[in-house]
Length: 185
Image 1 (cartoon, helix red, strand yellow):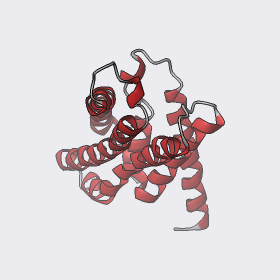
Image 2 (cartoon, rainbow, N blue to C red; image 1 turned 135 degrees about the vertical axis):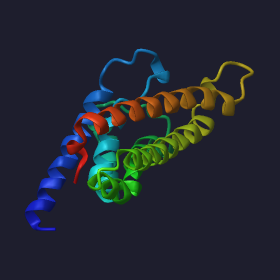
Image 3 (spheres, rainbow, N blue to C red; image 1 turned 60 degrees about the horizontal axis):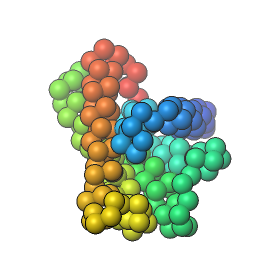
């Protein structure tokens, strides 16, 4: 890859992270149960550009929360888990990038869809695993009296995880069907 191509991809990485953050600033309709809209461009970018740039975009997205004062701080480790680790993990969709790109170039939308959904699944599940863990460890005091911290964290993070996954899959499949050229590397 030439220096110019690498610079272009780094600029794209910053733009995608900024767009993800912009979507995160939209008003939450259901509090903690709202899907992560920023996951959509980040997953698409990771599937287009691969693991390395996807992870970098996710890390930048997490760091932008600090710059914009959108961090809910309970402890150093909670912030590390929820803002650096969890957001970076959205780039794990790039794990299936090569297979996704290969099948997309061959024109196999069904197989491309499989690799895209697998990448989305990996990224969303691992991101929300970290949020679940942080919920159990750090947010358990916020659980209703008598409720298990595991159940509380699962309800809050599980619903956001499920909604994020469904939204990512629906939008990604629509893009794949109608504008697949946007996803080609």
